[in-house]
Amino acid sequence: MGSTRRFTLDLNEANMREIHESTCGAEQVRSGSPGPRPKVLLERRRSRLLRSALASAGVYALLTAIAVIMAGPFVWMLLSSFKPNQELFAYPPVWIPTKITFEHFINAFRYTNFARYFLNSTIVSVTATLLNLFFCSLAGYAFARLDFPGKNLIFFAILATMMIPVYVTLIPLFILVKRFPLAGGNNLFGQNGTGLINTYWGLVLPYVVSVFGVFLTRQFFSSIPTELNDAARVDGASEFAIYSRIYLPLSRPVLATLAIFSFTGVWDDFLWPLVITNSEHMRTVQLGLQIFRSQFLVDWGPLMAATLVVTLPVLLIFIFNQRHFVKGVVTTGLKG
Image (cartoon, rainbow, N blue to C red):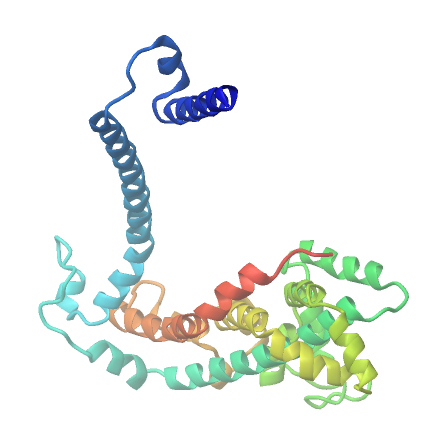
């Protein structure tokens, strides 16, 4: 009975010593010195919290400064489009207009054919984006879920074309569009006519399929469990039914991501419309902005107003698809 009681006391003492060591530190317990008081512990905790708060404040200050630098040109363009002409060239610069005017917007559409340019860019960008989403997702599904000879070799060959500069393919692409069979007066062999030059299809054709889109959709489809395919095939679904009814509804995030990149690339392109169009009624907005610039003079007011109008569609598309865009970037892995 006495030995049991002594064992219990020793066990309680060991437990109390362990708790004391975890609270005050083993070195202080062994040396017999008293542990830190609650006030000292509280001061240490406050010091850690203060250092963490200062570090977070520094990071936020840095990010805020970067955001201000990045947004500065856009804010200046926005405010300048509403300034009178005398405030555009005032020194020192006037950030906030003293009098808001819509004269620059009116002049941009009244004295130029800018509405037609905006319509052309809308038709070309929307058509190219829809076709790009369809063909890229279709090719991505084929490379992700179908088995055919040379699949990996073909896929890597397609990826290798991303290393070719666009300027190298410009002349061959122009010849291909000009000699498109049975278009623009061409015969079956693509001769005796203009092909798709100065047409909407000539503007859209280079953007119908993108290598980046094929890669992005293929990686996303590879992450979807193959059990869905097996279950659909057991129910008698065809490959196109599996693609359209199962994979497309699941791929909204990646399609939204691809739509933003595709629309922005087509909308902001300047080089290809410059090469393929030769009449004013087929110009796009990027070519239309050059109207406000001459050899010796730049009409800054209408130029700022027109540039703001051109920028708004891209901003709106990103804002409304931001949730899907972030989700698509996060969920699209690099699974091979």
